[in-house]
Image (cartoon, rainbow, N blue to C red):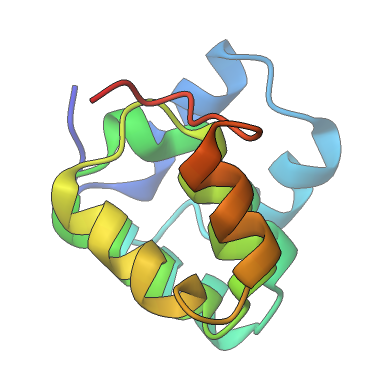
Length: 127
């Protein structure tokens, strides 16, 4: 199932629970159970708690539509090291998501970028 901004957030919560989401996360997300996914993402973004935004993106990306995924990535903001870690660790990013992440870290992490280029650091996503 792929959820979009109009989907009931309670359905996303049910998926999270079925996939053994941590109880701390469920405490945070249960507060939005009467919202749509778009409204819940708005609340999450307005909290400015990047760790929950990152957690939600990583845990739910496979069940979210691309527009919601992009909103979450843009909300993480200008954190080059975080974006680089997402870039190398997630194996199912779209080309568009790659561009978003690279746009934040390119030119700001020369050592990490060089390690990636020469193969000392490898991406989980295979080209």
